[in-house]
Image (cartoon, rainbow, N blue to C red; front, side, top):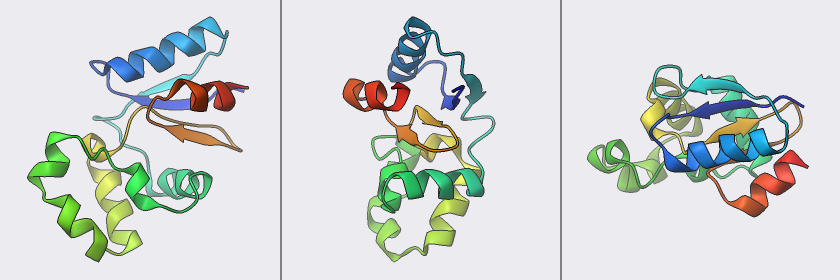
Length: 118
């Protein structure tokens, strides 16, 4: 299992996730999230893994999220609009964002990553 992992290099939780994968002998495909955000198809795939709650895909503590007023705007957006927005702005995507063909995880909570990595 070699997951695809979207990260921001200055993000401490992204570094924690990469360190954990290294400790486990997992070699991920690392993608810079700001320069190359997840595609709409990848976001839909992750959404399915997360039970369909699109809010879980958003970096709600980020400056772009706050500056764009997404706390108030997101409930009125269609799913397609929300996914398109995420696919165009990697700063809006909760990170780290990692997935394989059959599972995924966003953010860094050790117990979730332990389960994800097996």
